Length: 226
Image (cartoon, rainbow, N blue to C red; front, side):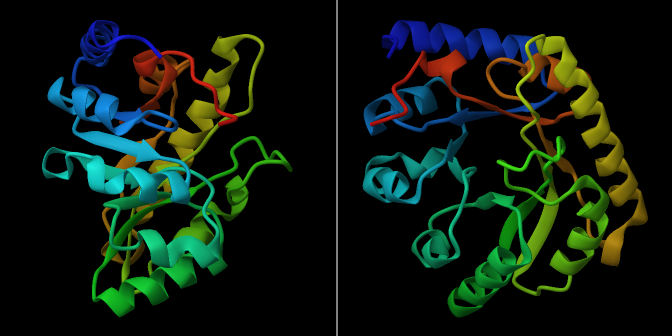
């Protein structure tokens, strides 16, 4: 973990690079609440957590008055109930069964949960997300759920030896995003395209991403096995 000065410098640099073209989400997996709150003091107003249990452990210690929390990791249906009233958006909605459980739990709380539909843009068998050719059909289904608000799409492209090769996948996602947005499904406004992480966020933004999920480029390399 880098020290606070380095974290502050990283945030300032990344925001300058983005130059208002995309929203910065700080991915905070394994980052302790003290460092999360320091990042918030440096102007981070959006964080993303990957694990339900870790989010619940840190939740009470995060300065939630100045930050929105998105859930960005794989989400089991039986854990939706634990976070439904603790996050501002679930970015990783990748299947109908998960969407239906979000609908059910949101209805219990009498809230509408903003979500993003996750697309498996590389058709990788080991990754979650709907197939690109089924993205429109999935979005149409999501728009039938009264306690779910579809706000856009997210994806994690395949790992490429040459980082520039990601551009192909980002551009495909941009096309899918535009195609679905222009169909104006049920008059729903889809305005978020969440693409790009620490290694490739600038390429993603060049290809049309307006929300990037950046972790190690802010907080330094982390041990994900803890």
